[in-house]
Amino acid sequence: MPRLKDKVAIVTGGTKGIGFGIAEEFVKEGAKVVICGRSRETGTSALSALEQLDGEVLFVACDVGDIDSLEHSIAETVNHFGRLDIYVANAGINDPEKTHFLDITPEQYDKIMDINLRGMFFGGQKAARQMVKQGERGVLINMSSVNAHLALDSQMVYTTSKGAIQQLTKVQAVALAQYNIKVNAIAPGAIDTELMRRVGSDKQLMNTILSRTPMGRIGTPTECGRLAVFLASPDSDFIFGQSIYNDGGRGFQAFPTPGYKTLSDEEYDLFQLLVDQNQ
Ligand SMILES: NC(=O)c1ccc[n+]([C@@H]2O[C@H](COP(=O)([O-])OP(=O)(O)OC[C@H]3O[C@@H](n4cnc5c(N)ncnc54)[C@H](O)[C@@H]3O)[C@@H](O)[C@H]2O)c1
Image (cartoon, rainbow, N blue to C red; front, side, top):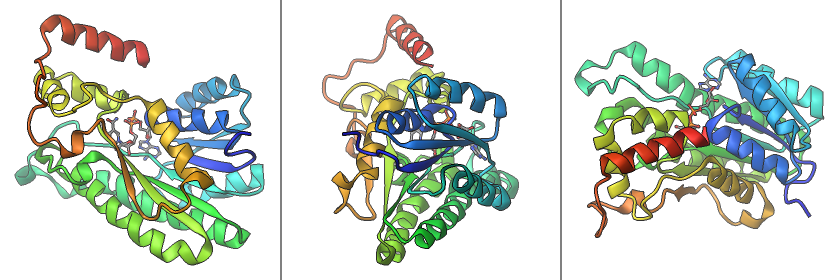
């Protein structure tokens, strides 16, 4: 029996990367899935890939940095599928410039915070209002990061937003428990996506990440999707306000893992090739 049969789920940023991995696993488990993203073109090609899995799916254009757009995505979902059971606030961006703390402008700060934190806060609020109206159980899943507790000074605003998401998840869980809405977060380490590929283009940084990942590899969007299915299903019903770290052990590894060998140029090229093949 599929674990999410007939549940209606929204995945923000579900058109690629981790969000798409979650949408795929939800469809395989019988959910009706709405993927939200800014680009209609990316959305349309993601939609046809999901339709090939025999999924009941919908693309809704949505910018999570815009409150009206968030409202519209919930309304469209309810218009089309009649209800909303699961809301995955996944969309997120980081700072490709790696701006130093001393140089970050209010505009750079607002851009990342509006999407990563404000969009998640109000998206979750609007989704929860709909779930409360329905009067049945609901699920919110927030996308955090291992950087919720690692101090990554080259991604200052991103790291701040992810730390805040860990607290947001706990307070949402407390506020919504009375309505039978379960709230948890996924906190990935390095996952094979475009966002990660931008980080991985720096060989020295890639070595630093892998040397502090005891499992010695990066994770996949599918692995995030399977965790999301678990958090969306009744299997996780006593897990409350938690951030679950699917990070290959990176979050607690202070020093290079014993036995880690620095990637040679050949191994690094091979790694890049594998990342390319998985895109
Ligand atoms: N890839 C990793 O290693 C990693 C690690 C930890 C956490 N994360 C988190 O996972 C989430 C997804 O990241 P990813 O690696 O899949 O990134 P990605 O860049 O591959 O995909 C991000 C998705 O979010 C969407 N998006 C961005 N801004 C948006 C907006 N304003 N409105 C709607 N959609 C928007 C994009 O269109 C895209 O679909 C992010 O919250 C990120 O912080 C990623």
